[in-house]
Length: 387
Image (tube, rainbow, N blue to C red; front, side, top):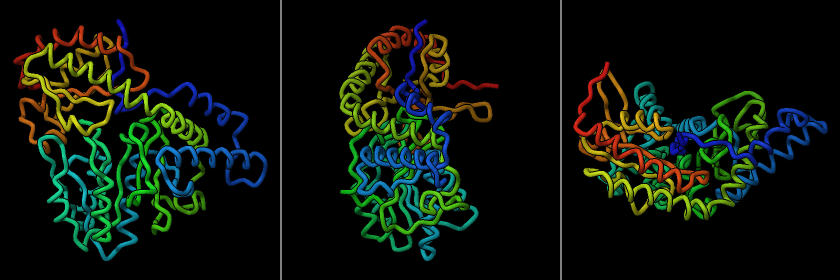
């Protein structure tokens, strides 16, 4: 059985070069970058290099616009909560209906506990943001706009540079959750009005438990984690040196491999997508097929259950993800597909395949060999009560 990993939007394997870069910081290079001796200085130099590697990847103007965090969730929380603190006279947030739970759950919590008003901008059937609704929501009461750069389920790309310019006209802070986009799409933040950007190491072949938040120079910021003076008082706590070094190396490799990501990986994605649509009836692609990540396809197999397809593919050594979840004995579609008004029978049959530079044509061929029989077996199995 050939193992095939096509769930790279969930997490990626650590690149061997990243691992090799990290290893010394578990052993001989164990210094604390805040310490004023040679061990600390060596760690401080490594941190500076990692910052510069990230700066190059996202096109930041200054290296110290980047602070290191534990990952995308912390970065998202830090950005949104800071904006509400630095603009206490404003008590509204604008976001989209298809954001990651790291944003939507926080917004829901703030709405319930702090009286913050949250505008969840709808999307159309292709997952594209309703720009008229967005424009209407941008009032002087909005503290922060938080819109993802690319959707984790469908790969649909949002026009964040344009959205940031629109937010600036309302004097609102603009933040983007770019966890899925960083390393896959060219970025030049210094030429945009984006104020803050979140990213995570394990989405670009770096380690888990480390990420970063870009904060445009001059933007007022209140630290989420308070304590020592690390990260120029913007994020307290002794730095995760192995993780930071690994994140920096992953950023360097992502920049180097981006052309491949947009060419070879995209061709693999397209080959799989074309093969599925040709071989399996009642199959279609979710999201904006013109503006999406090069590695992602969300395919619906109508009147089946995506989670069942996922489980049967796993028996053949194929890893992917479904857009449905089991709640209270029944399968429910993802909030992203619901927001896109995908019919219920179709939304339950969604499966996401997400590639990386470590995939090859044989991976695609293996999926195309086994999945038609799986879908045929499950055809008509909707709805499927469980438990």
